[in-house]
Length: 303
Image (cartoon, rainbow, N blue to C red):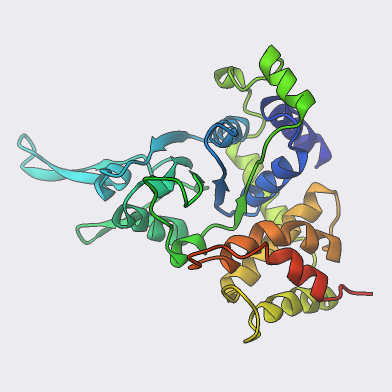
């Protein structure tokens, strides 16, 4: 397994400098079959990371720039009448790719944002009463700017919950930014990146993630974290059962990245902020201080 994962991380680290933890989390999210939300200021490398993941994992992909005047049909597709055949034909939209790069998703209206819900939850879309399956695997990597920036529409809680993880890249270190200025990176050469996995190999790794063992003691710790968020005196939104499943799947992928066949409490702690924070903050007009670290500090791990 290390022979497959190590080259992937090495190639990604040449694109996005000085962000090893974020790269591991993003890869774990996709290996676990989840969707990824990248939230940060403009110009921090969100779109670059999304494109690099798509190229490195060898998936068909398309970048779609979300705008305020974008319609659901621009995302899903539309039925167009063919006079020669005397019937309507469905023309697929960008969502019919194995990896959709939804750039600045919170620039689009809530109606267009909601068009992604069925696709993300069920791997299919419905148009005019007909259901069309999406490619397998199907991932959404979305980027968004902070809510306080002009021209943004906050994602509804139901859609935030569909994203397994939400990551913030943050500013690079001084040395990394110096390398960036000198051009000692691959961010401007994304077309030259190699596909290091086939779709079949990716599917095999995803199956191995599912087979990672989680003991009852580890599950008890996971449930203790989730239930702590549901106490009446806690700030933020309570974590849903979907969040519990996402946390377990992400922890299994994290364990696999570290060449373990079983989940340990450290795996849950490593992925918990990325899995839980955006759910805990969902629906809040003003963001609280980070809540996930507070929950981790309050709940004792397994001895």
